[in-house]
Image (cartoon, rainbow, N blue to C red):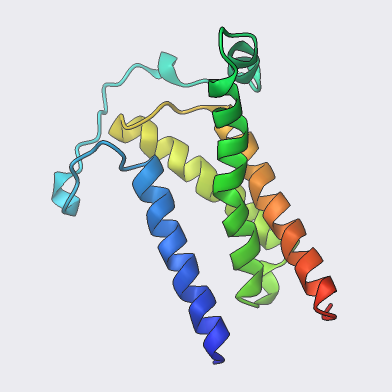
Length: 150
């Protein structure tokens, strides 16, 4: 295994830890697995399953800062996934693998945010995270093309 592959793997693990710490476990005092306290009685009305409705409301709100954070923040947070996952170099790490991983990881984050009551489950987050993974993959392909490797 080359040193750059090990560095890429380390970056990927650190990225995943940061992503989960800032999305699923934010504000929660979770030091050990037995400190997890799912809220099984949480009202499902806090789940937004209507695509782009929440983003449109943020866009038309008094300030667009929340809209920019919602859209670009979610895209930016998943771009490293699209960059690092295919760089690890397996066949399943190509476009389909990256797209599936982006979608599944995003859905998992939204489910855990709902169950742990550490965030709001929102389909818009899934959409923008998925786009971020694809943008990251596109940047990976551009970078490989510039380096002369296909």
